[in-house]
Length: 129
Ligand SMILES: [Zn+2]
Image (cartoon, rainbow, N blue to C red; front, side, top):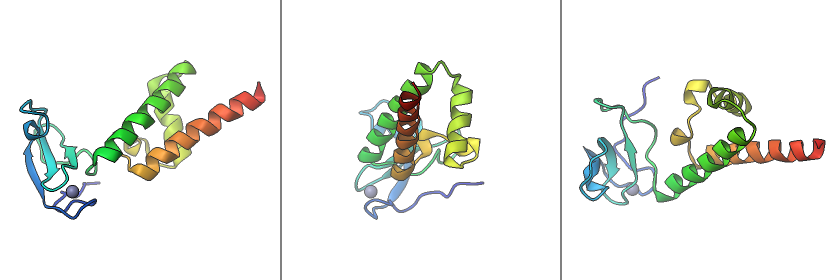
């Protein structure tokens, strides 16, 4: 499945340009990004290509993804699960193919879904104990 090249920002309708990430990170480049010229929502690309890694994320979504990562990683590490097994489990719970199960590519709703899946599992484990 090929991802669409973003041209219009999904948050503010601003114009999206393909540019060096140095403009976002005070001159330090982390490769090329698609960037909304209005609200600074951005997404990186697969190295050496113009293929976006996911959908544009604004500040709120970026912090939500960080929170989701912390909760999910904390859960499987605490369970002594392997990373691969953890993502396999998550993909089954979410009904997503494994190659699509990446928190860095999820939207707000999917992040919330991950958090709820982890909380439900944690609560179930507590009930069983
Ligand atoms: Zn925007």
